[in-house]
Length: 288
Image: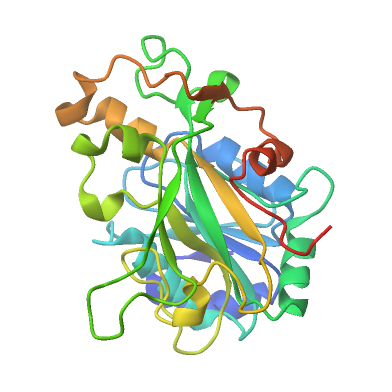
């Protein structure tokens, strides 16, 4: 299936059915093929690849991967594309999103498919899964100018923290909501605008009428932004992402100041969900 605009996506999205669906937002040509392959292997029923002008997709695409050809790059690509997809999805259908060179991991991903995780969350009466962005970076920045190296990827094992989510309005701190920080956005914060330093994202959720993704990667329905139920811990997920490293290594304002991303808190990424759970970067909740 191919979509020729955001309006076309909304009109035709129901034809994909209610299986777990991911929309992949392509900001450039980096690692599109590996990103698609990772999420096909994870078990997504359908993957929509959003492609602005000037970006080339690998050929051939797997059978369950569909093009969304954008006439121009939206000002906020994530909210524009995701909200167009939500508007066309059946109510209750699990939906996710990420960017190219980002790889979503769910608990026990080595042995369990993404659909199994989403079924469990549905049974737990959870409509969204809080997802942490775990920054990946090349071990040798001199050899990889854009900081992307899947064969020699590293991540921070320490330096993560959370603050109460308090927008400063009359409602006060939000119940069961936190702002999470860490990784490259924390270590190199002088090069990252404040509004882009958070590493939490609601990357997996169930579509429903009126639901919208906001520009800060939260949803417009408060309960979907919570990290847990009132009665027990909830499952979380992780997205291993080269996105921050790629930006810091290529943007003129930061690339000259950064010689390496590795530090005493770096460990090599093993491309396993179990490693992320062992580091406390995602948890299975009540799922065993």
